[in-house]
Image (cartoon, rainbow, N blue to C red):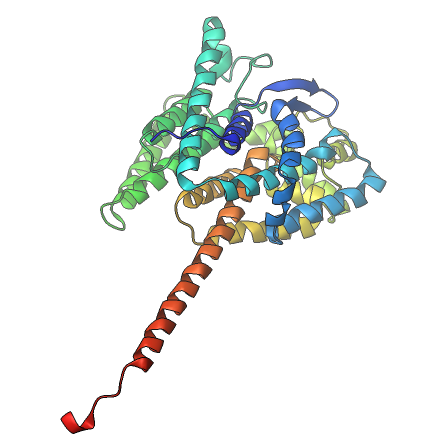
Length: 410
């Protein structure tokens, strides 16, 4: 059934399209940051929904955002601030808009919008590949430079592959899911993206689990096949060179660390910085402080581990609140589209050990939507409970008004 596009749906479509297909407007080499179209939308759109601020509730997510903001303000007096310190503003705006659209849109509307997002992403990929038709190796092969290539995300190949995998999770239960999962798996394989491959595997695993004939049938079949492929791959990798498996080889990361490049180098230097300050250096100050302490210059603007990132920039107090939020997402009962959103967030939180900065707008948008759907579910359950109590009271009242049986006819 086709849905008419009203103002709310139109605004949600435009925002989500720009969150998944990030169109850059400028780049700062000093802060190693991009300014994208969605940044402008996140500044302007909350103004249109100011009355919806009544939907905001105190929960681990809002407590985390408030604590990160307070930490950033306090740390700015000592460590200063830059362009990246404004990231917390976009986190708050993304969360707020997620709450707004989570309240205003129904499940069927969200399902249609997610399908349209797949169409937007596929259209971008096709057009991008047509533009670079003569040099597709630069787009997909990691052995070639890609500084001038336009990817779905300004984060490059890895984030594009991960976004496609995450989008496929939002499409679980729809007819287009096989297309979304296939594109995510194919793209991740061609781009040799570890996070993308893991995300696609998680997505397919969830789909198999939800489509199971019995409780364990598909789960154990998927697990067995995955383990079999892994074992065969490990055997083959000892004989021939397989680039995809090489991406999971920790020896390569260790060699990069010796050259002060890669994740292990970032994590080691972050550990050194944490020894001097466990209460947070402020949003956006993590990598600059690491560079000052180590005398090294990093290409990255984050440490590719959001838990370490939040500990480094927001302190132990912020990390604890974030972990509380993650635990609440994990253990909350869900239904409908909120269940897909929950799987989306959990997959992100799993991949976040090796990727992402933690300030991604699409993540916080869906965190806001998750809590909005959770609040709506609680309201509905309370109303249903009241209705059951009312029906029960009416039954008891009717029973009390019935005449007593005549003992003479007993």
